[in-house]
Image 1 (cartoon, rainbow, N blue to C red):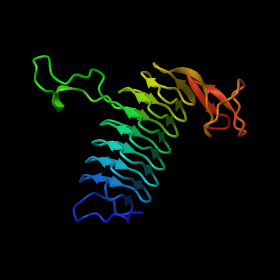
Image 2: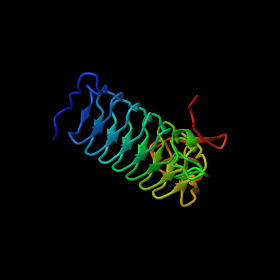
Image 3: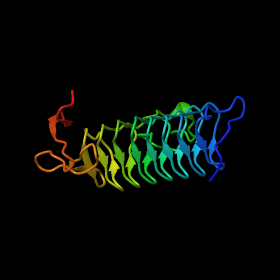
Length: 208
C-alpha cells in the first residue's frame, strides 16, 4: 500500500487525505480528511472533494467539480466540469456525467471551440442517490435524493426522489428505499421503512 501523500508547499490542500503515488492532483484542489484517491485518478484544479470519500482508479474529477462527504466514486467514472455531487452519493464504474447539451468540436465557422464558445450544463446528484455502472447522465439533469439510476441507463431528464430508472432513455421502473432496496406496492421496504408520495417523488414517513 502506498504511503500517505504529503503535498508540496503551495500545492493542493490534501494533507489529511491519502493519494496513491500515481494520482495526478493539480494545484488549488481541496480534499477532505480521510478521503482516498487511488491509482491514475486525475483531479483538476479548483475541484473540492469532501471527507471520508473513496475515489477509485482512473477517475476524472474535472475543473471545479464539487464532491460532498462520504461519497464512493468507482473506477473510471468521469465527472465533468459543472458536476455537483452532494453527500453520500454513489457513482458506479465507468459512469459519465456530461456537461454539453449541444456538443460540437468546432464553431459554425470552422474554428475549434474554446471556453467562450459553449455553455456548461452540469449534472447535479443530490444526497444519497446512486448512478449505476456505465450509466450516462446528460448535462443539465438532476438526480434527486436517494434515487437510483440502473446500470447502463442514459438519463435525459430529472429523476425524482427515491425513483428507480432504467434503460435508454431512462424510464421509471419503481421506487427504492434509503437502504437501496426496492419498495413494494404499498411503498414499504423490507428494512422497515415506509414512504408517502411527495410531489413527483417520495418522502420517508416521519421525515419533516
